[in-house]
Length: 285
Image (tube, rainbow, N blue to C red):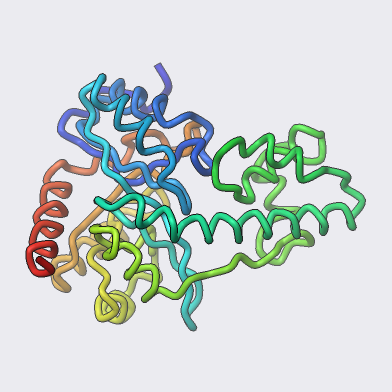
């Protein structure tokens, strides 16, 4: 049993990744790990992709784990980059068309990163990056894994610290959508938009500003949040009428304390999200 795969009953994990983006396990394996951990439901939230949903849901039906359709989006405004979780998506063909354009931008960015690495005398190829990504949406972790496989980095942290992180020699800025457009994408696919892992930047004024753009919820529980941050965000969620969410941001391997189900997100939060979704859909109908 993988560390962290314990017996957490009546808990959910609403932020998880698979090989459909930059996770290390196929969607079915992610669901199997959730079943071993005793989770009653998960949200698969691959970056710019819902390609893993069919496989994940089939596994969920076999193993008794509910699988919520989601994706993680990178958005941007004058204050900088934010990540949004689009959860409870019901119109996957509609969202897939929009996500395909974002994945194309990811591929172009990967090409540019490879070119910068080559200019630094590091002869990895785009083909090697594609082999790491498989059929998933390409991200910097795939470039990092190609660097590791070829002996140019010791591990992911080393690759990002020296080469791929912001301000490093091979860093290339990603193409962003506006926060309003990301929220619209989530709503257009029948879902909700949740601000992911805001940390200290999740101030009252910032959350109120994003709520005015249509934000539905905030990720209260995340491995990067301190106990104080979790308490503060939970209180702000109640005060601003935002649904709470939480998850491990699990990518399929041990990452310090970031193990599947580690945030002990209560099933009640999922129930509240679903009530919010039903109310929103009734208003549109």
